[in-house]
Image (cartoon, rainbow, N blue to C red; front, side):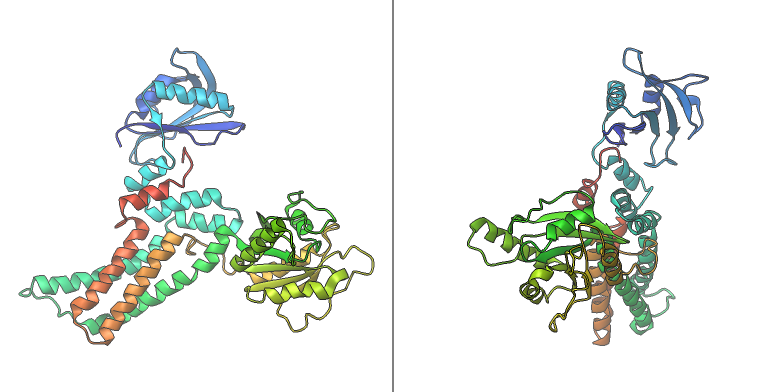
Length: 455
C-alpha cells in the first residue's frame, strides 16, 4: 500500500461543495504540487487538520478552482496513512479536472471502498466498524443511522471481544497445563468453566436474537399489497409514495406485474410490493401477474389486504388465501365515496391484526394505517449499535453459538477436555471473523466491493 490513491468522495452530482480525497505515502508531495496556499507556507509545512485557503492547479500551473485544503499525517489519520482533502466548489467538471491533476502528479484512481479498506488493514478500525461505514451511508431511517453509528464506534466487537477473551483464557489454561506439566500451574478442571460457557451462550443468543429486528431496520419489512382487481392497490401505493408510481385506471387487470418500492410509515420502513389483482383469468399475461403476486405474498412478512366495499364478499376470499403471512392488515378502501364510510364488517373468523377504512384519494385513514404498522413493529429500546443488521455478522455469531453449545454438551457427556476445547476454539475462530482476526482475504475483498468510490 505504498502507492497514493485519489477519488472524488462526494459523488458526481452537482452540489455546492465537492471533496477530493488522497491517501498514501506520496500525498504531501502531490498536494504541494497541485495546491498553492494564498498566504504563507506550503501544506508540507502546515500542522495536521489545519484548513488552508488557496488555488487548485492543473499540470500547467493554471488555476482550476479556489478551494480549501487540509492534510492529516499517518498514523493518526482515517486510513492510518498520510491523507489530504481538497474542498472545492461542487461542479463535476471542476472535480474531474482536480482529479486529473492529482493523477498527473502521481496518484492513481482509488477502488471502491479502498480508503476504508486501508483503514482496516492499518488497524484504524476493525471489520465491523468498516462495514458500519457503508451501513451508515445507506441508512434510510434514524434508527438505522444510530445503530450504524454505534457499530462504527465498536459496539459489536466490544460485546463479542469480551466473550472471545474468556474463551481464550480457557484455551490458554488448557494448553499451559498440557505443554508445561512440570510447572506450578493450577489444574485444568472443566467443571470450573461451566458457568463461563453458560454466560457466553446467553450473551451470544441474545445478540443473535436481535438480527430479526436489525434486518427489518436495515432492509425494511417485506410487505405486499393484495386484493381483487380494482380494489385500489395501485392507488394506495401511489398515495403512500406521494407520487404516481403505478398506473391507475378503472379497467380491471391494469396492473400486470409487481412493483416494489421502499415506503416509510412513521418509524417503520416497508419494502412494499404492489401486485396484480387476484382472480381467475384466461389472459396469459395477466395469469403471469397473478402468479407473481402469489409469489410475492409467500415472501412477505406483512400483507395489506384491500377490500372494495362494493364487492365485499368476493374480496374477503383474498384474506382467506393469505392467512399464512405473519402479519395482516385488512383495509376497506374507497372511504371517500358516500355510504362507504364505516363499512367494515365481520371478517368471518379470518385472522387480521387490524381493520382499517381508508381513502387513497383524500388520504383519510393513512394515519391510522401508519399507527397500525408501528404497533406491529415497535421500535423497542433505542439502537446503540448492539443490534445485528449484517447477515455475515449473524452467521458468525450463529456458528460461535453452535460451538459453545457443542462444548457444553461435550462437557455434560463427560468427554475429555480436548474434545471440549476443539469446540471452544471453533467458537473463537467464528468470533474472530467479526473483527477480522481470522477472516479470509477473499471475504475481506467482497465486503469492500459494496462501498462507493471515494469511501
